[in-house]
Amino acid sequence: MLEKIKDVRLLVVGDVMLDRYWFGDVSRISPEAPVPVVKVERQEERLGGAANVARNAASLGATCSLLSVVGEDEAGATLRRLLEDGQIDANLHVDRDVDTIVKLRVIGRQQQLLRIDFETPPSHEILQAKLADFEMRIRQADVVILSDYGKGGLTHIAEMIRIARSHDKPVLVDPKGDDWGKYAGATVITPNRAELREVVGRWGSEAELEAKARKLRGELGLEALLVTRSEEGMTLFADEVCHQAAQAREVFDVSGAGDTVIATMAVMLAAGADWAEAIRVANVAAGIVVGKLGTAVVTRHELLAAL
Image 1: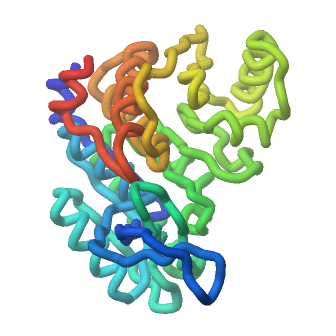
Image 2 (image 1 turned 30 degrees about the vertical axis):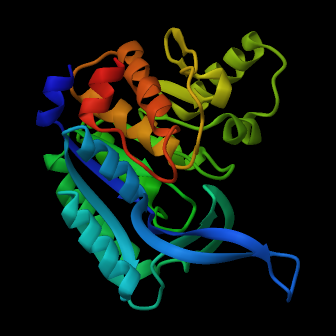
């Protein structure tokens, strides 16, 4: 199945961001305020958001296209360079009225001390142009991922799902917020435990969770619902329920793990895997990536070794 991934053509649409890391040593407290002083020793820049989803898919060997919006700034230029280095075919629409989304993390002694976010919602005109681009690119894709980070880049997501389904393309959605009506008609959505609870309410047993999942699938017309559950692993609710226990390994950083899950699952489904096999491999990939610092990817070699 993994051999077939090289023939998969994936289209990722969503909010891209640049993840910046400042690593340094912490040896004293500031005399100005009770905060640690970080002496920055090195800096790293990585793809974040939907760009990290695309990077994960490309790392596994799939051919990946990315459609998103950036600002006309240094961060946007850096994103283009990183995407090019990752061999990702990126079509980044430029909105001169926004800043490219940047998440700056300050790390001291392998601990995240602070995160600073820079962001502005994109304009309506740019999003309309992106929708037209989506209609053209969908024909060449085998599978579509809509990566919603709630930053405004997927304002037309309901229309994108309709277009993709009219071309008989599977659509995987990483949801955000509590308005999930816009995801109706998708093939599968992949919320984490907290995101699902925000929409369907709390549950007291596995039977109650399954009932809530079944009801949500019916309301949105989903083929499946994948819930990632941290230390409880992940559960797929489809015609049958399939559960994967969490991989027993030390968790270093969970940021970006959802990107790895949806990217791995998408390329596995497109390569011909069934639901159970796709989430088994996605679960193994997630177990690898949480052992790395920051937004990271799983390589094909690492996945083969773990399997």
